[in-house]
Image (cartoon, rainbow, N blue to C red; front, side, top):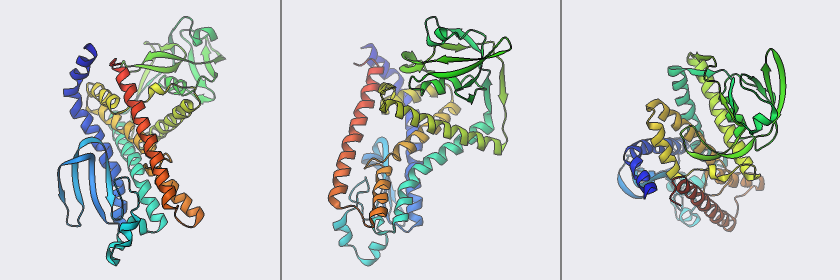
Length: 377
């Protein structure tokens, strides 16, 4: 009952924040598809934020039905010639189209145009992240905490390797360290590989070989998680500086942050595939809703930062070569470019069915993780 009460307690405040975050990310994603499709003369029949039954909507002068649907997680753009919201081509419908209708069918457009339409959604997500992170960097700047070691947990990998309180970390595997926050970012995606950590101690430069361990810990929001750690905390007395950016500097910082999020996500997924990281780190809609509620308590700017992170994550996930996702369409188009003809209807149908199974399986896994974190199981 306590877990259920906890779930209910954050829902009233968290729901508006969650809807804001997920709707903004999905709207921009679908808007990317929509704008590029319109540019190439593709007829857009439906622009939906969410799935399921329509709550309300309107039809514009070019015949596109804009609607908000009951299930807020996700959305879709349906083009002329699509069989469904996943943009599977409807060959039979295309054969019955008039000459004018065929001009607006996505599946009858040149290959490069179809590829741009598929890629434009994820690209719009990356662009949204860069825009938001640029604004945040320009407005708030960046706080840098000197990478000075404070507490070293007894028996931890850091303690066993000889890392001591007061050590200044200078590099990790050749990467120069100037901010303490770089350490958990690198360590968390290490996969348990031994890291060469350079430190400066009493004027001397040392190299320590430290092997992170996968341990149950808490993230910055206090949630239970499994993560690679070495067992250190920063020195609360370490020097803290605040960097300010002009417009160009803010854009550069935003691009670097977007790349860091992308790289960290890919490395983390790679470690999970190799069995060097736990899949319980994956979150689904329930976990995102809880995270949104927690971040919203810190204010609107942290919430915008979360939007940027989720936008990169969703854009990247949609580029994975899984049928049903944008990356799956790009995979089919790549096969078409190599073969000189589209894949057969049977092959595409099998691919979409396998993609559906994979996506549903991933949704079940992430939802299970979310419920376990809430102590509902």
